[in-house]
Image (cartoon, rainbow, N blue to C red; front, side, top):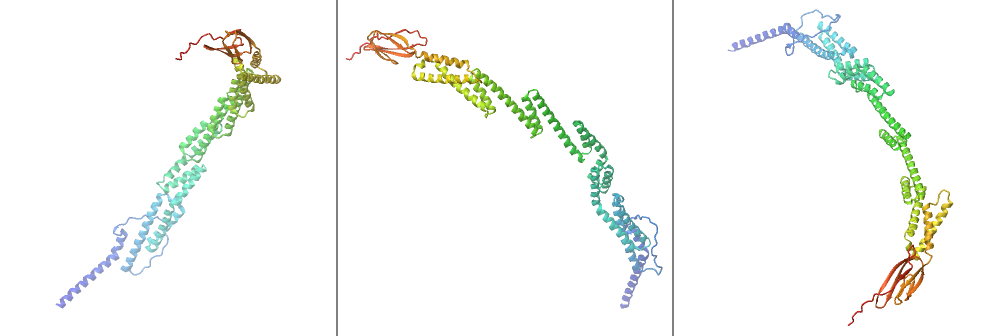
Length: 498
């Protein structure tokens, strides 16, 4: 039984050894072909393009005995590493070629490609370790170029903008085109190319527009500038020229308004001139020239109005229309309340109004002068009037008006007439006790004669048993009163005292 067991174990050993021999043969003869055709995990390997270069001498493998399976496996691993490094660099190369790397990094790119070609030469002679190293150097160089793309993109964009500012359309177009190849999704690069393509036309329009507006053709110049803006609204001269055009339009409208104002002043239309100057001030708020024109015109208008009112006031004074003269001086003072002549003129006219009213009061109501207080007041007013008349006669600038002269003459005559007694005969029944308030008690009489100054009088008669009588009468002032009867004749009935 033990012998049979040993025989079974020996048989398995021989089977295992046979399997190992077959595996070794497979590694030696089959695996290299599989590795060359497939990548792990056993997917068909993509054929890698290799840049053909002139053959360079490489160290030849020494001839000798056949390689062991382990050495073959090591070589196969090195081959895979070389192929992986090659695949990575080829992927980077394809990515960079899409961005036209030869146009913006030719020297560095060529150096990276040269390293890859050296790797190919080592690969052809089965020096996979050196091939891997060369491929990896190329891959790292290409990776650095990929990393430089954002920086290079920005450099090209900056160069393009500088070229636009310098009006260099060709350089701008070249820079933006390269930038657009580096970043295929960049709208800024596309816009830069568009701006570069129309740059010459924009420059022409701006130059012609500027020349037109400088020659006074402001609207025509603006039209060309707007055409340029439609082509490239971001051109730096657009905003400058548009702002200048707007300022030229403001200047033109301001000049026109000021010219209209001065023309109206020439036509003595000061009010309309002020309106024009105010329009100019609205166009240019705070403009000193417009404000001075307004102030000067208003001053001229004020002076003209003052002179007109002064002439009117003097004419009213000459016509002795003192109340109207006061109104004229008030109008002057409303324009300038510091004018001394207007202040003095108004004061004088006010005093003349008062004098005129006092004189007319006595002349229109002479009966009031029968009272001594009123009579004395009338004499005082007359003295003021005569003193004024004397002063006016001595002043060559002023004249005594006919109204005042007439008032003085009539007042003097009135006061003289008030001093001349008028004879009046009083008739009674010799039973009535007569009293005249302004004269005194006359007693009873049949007839008596009195000398009375012109004025208003009241006579009262009393008699026991008879009704009292009262008579008001006026002496003088054109009254044709020669006699007056004062007599109590109406008997009063006796009162029963029982």
